[in-house]
Length: 141
Image (cartoon, rainbow, N blue to C red; front, side, top):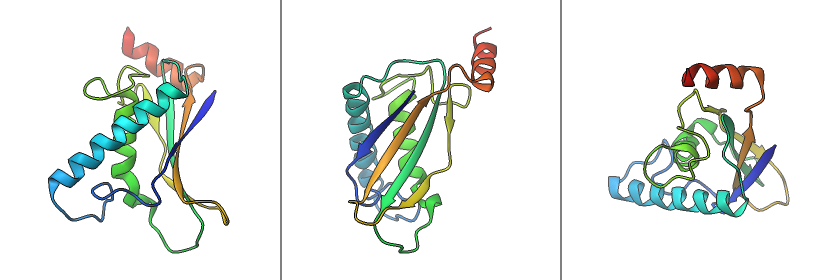
């Protein structure tokens, strides 16, 4: 099963872009805001706990302006921490956000003319995929 969580940001929040150069406090505030929002969205969507998950961050844009998907990795990190970190503000949908429990796909940018810019977090339960079950089972042995 796949759930799609919508983050209302038109571009990465200050502090959560690889190109951002500013005060650490701004980054910490943005990270906390994103984690709190993602936890609330996950709970609202009634996402169940699982053995293993796949997470993909999609930046929906309405112009073809050149953008680098590598620059949104800091936002992806905050999202993944919110879904599966074993400490701090987290929905704790998996045991941890490490590779044994969470497969993180490379962020992508999707051009959708006429749609409002936003970020979509695609959360997929991959517990029953052969590669997901084997790795998670090995971790618990």
